[in-house]
Structures are given as structure tokens and as C-alpha cells.
Length: 331
Image (tube, rainbow, N blue to C red):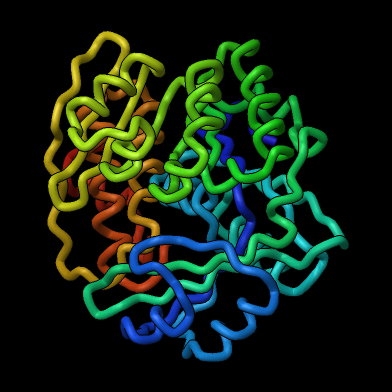
């Protein structure tokens, strides 16, 4: 174990299965375009049976962020729960090959989770997720030594549907804050935020230092239609925030910094938006861990997101550190 990690991610340990599809396929299987639904074993089999996968890779929102952090040569760790099966081995090996410290909790009560991602010709990704073992993470899986060793403990919003996972995160936040470290949350999905904002808001107010959201998620959190209003409301409940706006870049603020819009980067080609927000968070947190100003954190995050959306899959295919150096963002 390292003496000090930039970020400890807590999230879904799942394997992403990606395929190209058309909108008729989404309609047939009741998958909302651009959204995410949770599915059971039977529906997972039906959807997977109709897909023609082009990639099967270790995924999960927080894990993707940590992989991007590692590609920037940051030090990352991850906690997630796997089934005792082959896909669990795939997930474990993938993170460790990326030099991520992985606390590999396992259970024989459910298989490893998987996310079935269908990418339409406009590069929008629509996800159907079987959570499986990932949802079984508990307070007992939180390692105090690891949490104390991380500058930031980072949780993905997809797990807010599970009481045990929320309890695990708030427990970890207590340990992190007692050690003088920060905590962060990504909201993950606008539909989930709309359904669970009554649970999410108190956790942010009481436990979270940094919130990541896209524009739709920020609006849903406060049930408003004006982005400035959402940003103002978010500032009232958390010290740091980053709201991504696709090709428009992002808006960032800090406890002593007014909200500022930071332009994004244009990808060479737009292939698949899967993992864009995850990549942004990983890059932003890398900069934050090095005490860069928030605008540079946002630039690094946007650059990471641009690389990820230029190809199929949620993980970088080239060194993000080299890209950031070429742009003069890091040395």
C-alpha cells in the first residue's frame, strides 16, 4: 500500500460490454436513449443475446475515473465487490494492470456485475446494468488505513439505490474527514438523481466536499430548469463543484472561487460518449491533488474526456499524461 493516494474510488465493480446498435434495438428492449436502467438476470440475458459486442472491458463509473487518474500517472486505489467468477478475474486484472491498488472484496451470493452499453450512430450511449455483486458493498469492506491514505475518497452516485452502499460511503467519509482528507461524489445519472434526490441531498450537505455532475444531473438535483440557479444551489451545500456541459466545457467553483466557465476541447472524432464524465472527474481530481487552480483542473478533466469519447469504450487508449504534457497542462 502506498503511503499516500491521490484518490480512493468506491463504486460498482462491473464489466462493460459495448456494441453498436440502432434506436430500434433500444425500443425493443425498453432501454432509454442516453440513460441507464437497472435490469435483472433474465433481461440481461435477453439484451446480451441481441448484441454484437465490439469490446468487453473492466468498467464502472468510479473505476473508470481511477483508471484515467492512473493514466495521468496519479496514484489511485479502488474498493468494489466482485462475484467469485471469471468476470471478477477480468475486472481485478484490468485495474491492477493499470497500476491501481484494488481492495478486492468478493461474495459467492451473486455474480460479478455487468453493464450492457449500446452505442447509436450519434455516439450516444444507452446502458442496461445488472449490478450483481457490486451492490453488496458494506461498511466492513471499507479499510480505514486505505481511506486515511487517500487525499480524496470518491463515491459514484449509481450506488445510491442501496442502503448498505450509502452507509459504507458515509462511514468512509467520517474516516476521511477525521484524517483531514476530502470526499467527493459524482451524481452519475439524471434519472437516478430525480428519483433519489431526497437521499442524495442530505448526504452532500453532511459528508461531501466535491460534487461532479453534468448539466442534466445538476438541474435534476434541485428540480430547476435554470443552470445558474442549480449552480447557486449547489454552492450552498458543498465547497467545490464541477458541472460538465459536453462540448461547452464545464463550470467550476470553490469555497473562495466564484463559478467560472472553462472551455472544453474538441475531439478529433466523436465515437462514443461512454465514460466522458468519469474521465473528466479523474482528470479534475488529478489536478486537485496537485493543488492546481480549479480552471486547470477543469482543463485536464476536459482533455481526458475528449480522449475517451474519440473511441469505443470508457478507458483511455493513449497516455493521458502525454496528452496533458503536450497541452502544457502538466510538466
